[in-house]
Figure 1 (cartoon, one colour):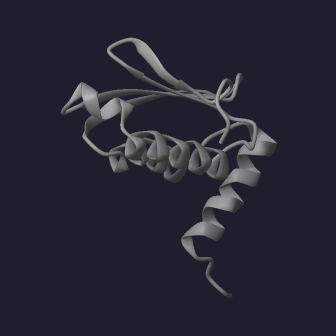
Figure 2: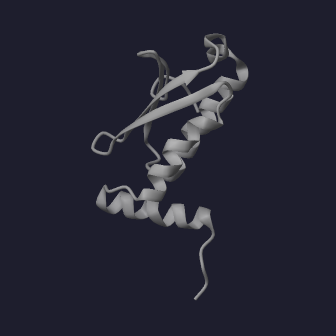
Figure 3: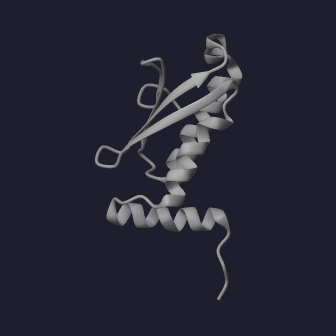
Length: 110
């Protein structure tokens, strides 16, 4: 029996999520770690609403100025794409800093 590579495994889990609405540990781990790839991010929390297909990140950063950098904006776009790859194509992805939304995928193109 041929084993699946990690991307294939995530896509198989996505199909299960689309069918059942449930998330697997591997998907949750990916979602928790994605924002840590963003520049200046020290830590991040994630809240996932499976009914409304919303993934909401709350970021802690080294420098507030970094939130407006091109690298941060590009990184947020990439994380949004990854979330949609792992979960639902129509996922809503938000990022906030100290309670203020800095990105909402419903209002920005990806």
